[in-house]
Image (cartoon, rainbow, N blue to C red; front, side):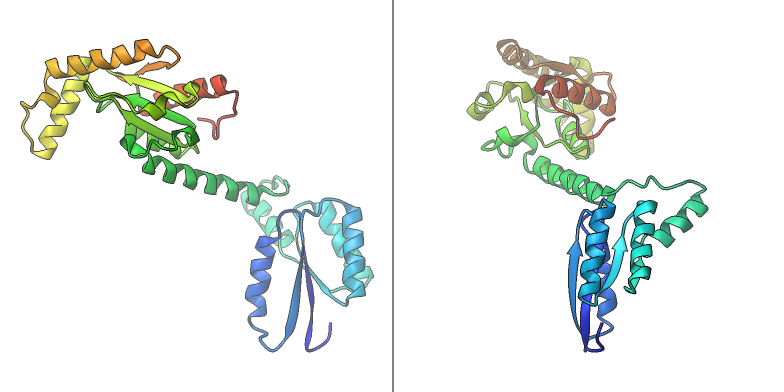
Length: 279
């Protein structure tokens, strides 16, 4: 490499983003140098390494690599040393130290960071979708949901939706309101995505009264009265009976996690998909 510039080849068994970020951070210290970066992704074979090191040598470049395979790291080091190519291993020393510290060998599986990043961003997208589609706020794109929860007020629709979204599911929930028709959009989508929620009358009455107390509202309102709740449940049951493809889950004595697990298991079977995350 000349004193005024050069080419840094980044060899990675993944995307090379980690090494690229570190190299760029270091190159900030050399503002007067004209440096080119060449990112070589998904390096998984010795043949790929041989070709890349030949290319680096022909261009008087240097190598920075993030490869988890011990065999491939040794191959890069041996070739760079024999051909006089400057190199730095960003992962090897760190993995060695961690293996000693944790008293456990690394998995040595390539591409795990990218898989983790993709999983993280998928979860964030699911959470954002779910918040946007809470309590029937947005019904125009119900078809984009993975799961749709339907039930009267205080049947755990929102808590279940948020819990499931943190597992990577895009969830919409649609409230059943006494004598109010459900949105037409609900019946135009894949009915295997829809789940009905129900609850014991007395349990629901207690839940609603507690909520009214916390809000400082009138405890004698229809919202918490047994007769009104009975009418709501009867109305909801009528809807469920007309839509027999919707499985119904009773949330009365179940923990949130238990209900969520049962729902995702059933949805996975019905739609022939792998759950985003095991419970």
